[in-house]
Image 1 (tube, one colour):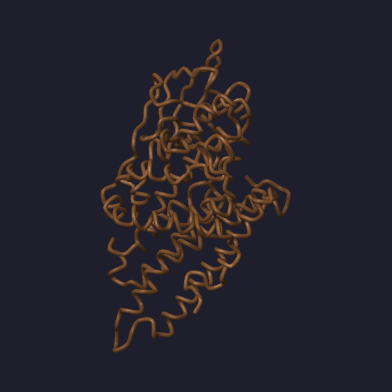
Image 2: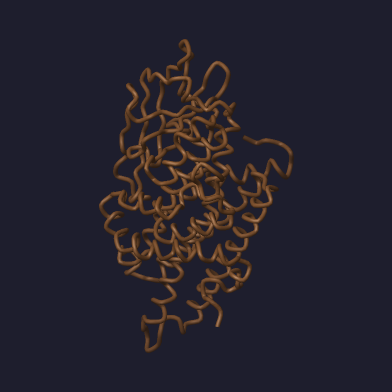
Length: 385
């Protein structure tokens, strides 16, 4: 019998190293995330104790080369995201911000001095990063940036704020994007710099096991050594976002797989009207529909990973993946919650937690509409933004 979570036998196309990495992360999640995640979600706490454990596994920045990073392929990186998000979207979000946004920004746009100073420690989890692009008024229009940096001798003076910043409160450094007289530039802001403060956003009903913050900059003096020398214009942060969006393509399917596995087991053991729930045609059709969507999402993630490893990927292809798989995962989670009946609103089952998290996943790193318009521009050659 085929694996219920892999009906199309996609595993046949994974090499031994990719399977080993996937299974190692799956074991980590089973042992270190699942036993505590309900408590963390209920109490609005991020499990900081997992940071060093993830670092010890060599997962942070694992698809980057050099500077203490593992240099894995993008299929392996995607599988890491898939397994982490089976645990919780908050864990994958933390990992993505550390790896695909903060570390990638330094690796791609930083100086050799910056790479050697930050990346080895970040790969071990000794330094935590955040990524400050979003602003409260900007939303899907990052070019409408109010945070500014002015040259002052050899230094820069930073003023403004950022919002919805994952890892913001616990981060040691923030990669902050600001408007200058020469366009958008990237800065490495360290947590102890005078004038830099953070405020944790409370009362979230999604990603409750994640720390989400506002960042405030009041005349923060940034030395010239903390500017990312190769980052010029809006294209730089958008390139970082493409890396994070790639991880979501895999991660969202991991959340859907977790919900599906749970409801499949539940339907076998739940008896109504003298027979198990899964003996009903309606339930079987719904399960089959979920399996179809998850399988297509897996194939899409795998194909986009291959394009990325071949260095032939373009943003529209990533947008198709993020748009499709975030939508698929949210709809699967909602249907699983419904099949669970009254139990579906209990944190004893993972569907409600994943469903609430996925309401954020479908919004951040580009809303569904943004990705539709990216694809639309690719098709027509006309920007509708």
